[in-house]
Amino acid sequence: MGFDIQAIEGDKWEVVLSDEPSYIHALKMAPEALEPELGSGLWLVVAFPVWSGPVRDSVRAAIAYAKQYGGKFHLGVRPFDYHEEMSAWWPASEVPAGGGMSLTVQDDPHRREVHITTDTSTDPAWLVLKDGQVVYRGTGARSAEQLGEMMHGVVQ
Amino acid sequence: MHIDIGGEGRYPGAVNVNPSPVTSTTGAPGRPIPNRVAGTGEKLPQGNGSADLITVENTPIRPGAPAEIARVVKPGGEIRLVHPAKYAETAHQQVIQALPPGATVTRTTVGTGDTAITTTIIKLP
Image 1 (cartoon, rainbow over the protein chains, first blue to last red):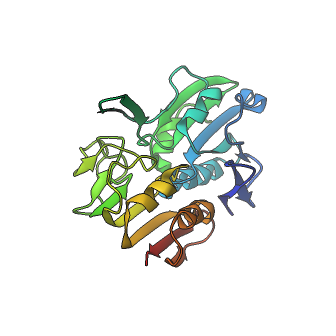
Image 2: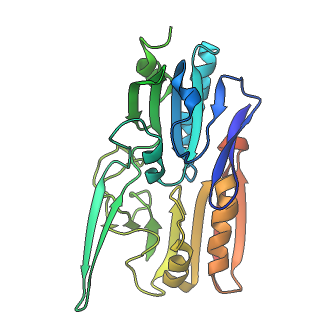
Image 3: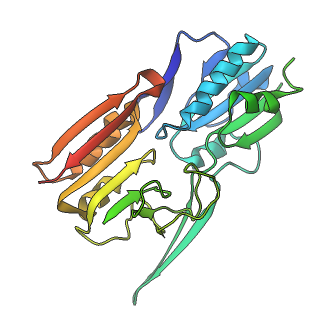
């Protein structure tokens, strides 16, 4: 039981589930669009960065929470590397690109360099879809109790 | 000097190189990061051979970061990398390959499956 990631071609990763029930799904990294199957039924999607250990606590909490409900909703587990990957599939205008932005300007006599970077304080990203409609979207660590609050009124 | 790439203050006295001015996972989120220098692993603001110790923990190792780490660490210095085990298999190797030959590498993995965390300690000659 459990999950892990494994490297596939290039710098891509995939989630590998071990003996998890069929309502828990390994979703593709950086798809070109939200998968059609997520447009039907009730889905909780968690997207997590492959390079963070602590954020996996939230993924484990989501798997445990899904098992409590025994298939009353689908759980999709999606890895990502860069937050920018989410712009292709995140079904809302505001993509969770990080919790803050930093602007650094470096001047020298011949050129000015401007660096705009985002931080990673908003991992993982959460999405609840009911028949393709966004019921909830949010970011940050969640315990099983907090997932219950998030799904309250959605899952029967 | 100890440089913590992506650090938020977990190591007292370390210079925390972080694009964000506030904490996300260390202590209470949203607090100012102490001793912070704006930057990323791909473009460290420190000079050549200036760091005795560089740490990268649960922060991405992007293309370009291994070369920057190799540039900034002192001869005789140490690099400590901590990541989920599968990620570490490739990312830590990229850092090792960017370093001059002769480094001593110690790798330890604790946990299994999704809880497995690998710590790689590299000591330069």
